[in-house]
Amino acid sequence: MKNFIRKFYYGDIPDDKAGGDNNETSKNPPLGGRGADWPLWEVFIRSKQGLDHKHVGSLHAADAQMAIENARDVYTRRMEGISIWVVESKYIHASNPEEAGELYEPAVDKIYRHPTFYDLPDEVNHM
Amino acid sequence: MKQALIDYTLHLADNSLILGQRNSEWCGHGPVLEQDIAITNISLDLIGQARNFYQYAATLIGNGTTEDSLAYLRKEREFKNCLLVEQPNGDWAQTILRQFFFSQYQYLLFEQLQNNKDDQIAAIAEKSLKEVTYHLRWSSEWVIRLGDGTEESHKRMLKAIDELWRYTGEMFMPADYEKDTGIDFEKMKVEWNQKVKTIFSEASLIPLLEGRGAAFMQTGGKEGKHTEHLGYILTELQYMQRAYPGCEW
Image: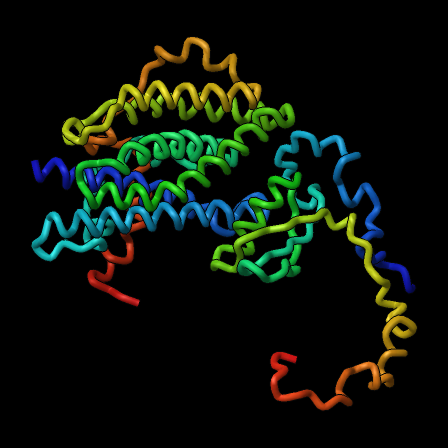
């Protein structure tokens, strides 16, 4: 009953689902009828000079070039960005949500790790 | 003299409007979500260009003419767009190829128009050139993808070429109102053919071009003599203003 749907986390996507280099269609990929045949890519956008690239979402594309163009059309059409990074989703390794307990909860009661017990001089801004 | 400038401006506007309208038919029907958005983005770019040209034409004509009256209230025979842009979308290959042929043409044209003696035309061309550069890049890549893709996609590209090639010659045959624009059509034609050949050879489509130089070319769009398709496009495009004159929302 439990495993009707197999959920894939980043870094855990099997090759037949991920497409990519070992897939024959990836060299000069035609329109396979469905975008689902194309690998998934994660998109990062820098909104302006000096800021970092932020994850904005994902999309399907046959190769990196198409992924950047798709990202341009999907994620920057309202002037959201000046630079785009894409990375194929299968290359991202993620922590397992089921391990959230042991990974993150131990930090909850350690408030002394926040630097809130110091009196800051008035001259120090932006802390 | 002034009439020629008006006609020429309308010709530029009509090209962009009709292709924009055609591409917009893909909205919600694109082969994948990302390309659905890409083609409708291009559609909006083209309609934006059309607005700029119509606004300029309206000021030249005067008498209360507006961009809306030019787009919504002229008849089929008054439209001066090339036959190429009114051709049906067909499949994705045909839409892509039509965009590629037109963007390559528009790219070369706007490059020249940037330095046009008419300041307004020059300014619109310069502003639009960035958009067109992207349209050209996007459509070229798709021509290569499909031409050099699977057997099926290759076959569809060949069919699209058969369908559309006969409408490409008209772009380089100046109408009366284009004769005084200072555009070098012969240069544009040579460059266009070279570029198309380059992309086609990358797309493994080259043998098809042999002997096509002399192919019979359909003409007439620039003078208002259109294929049957334009009437249907205008019926849909102009319906609201025809049924409810002056309606706004």
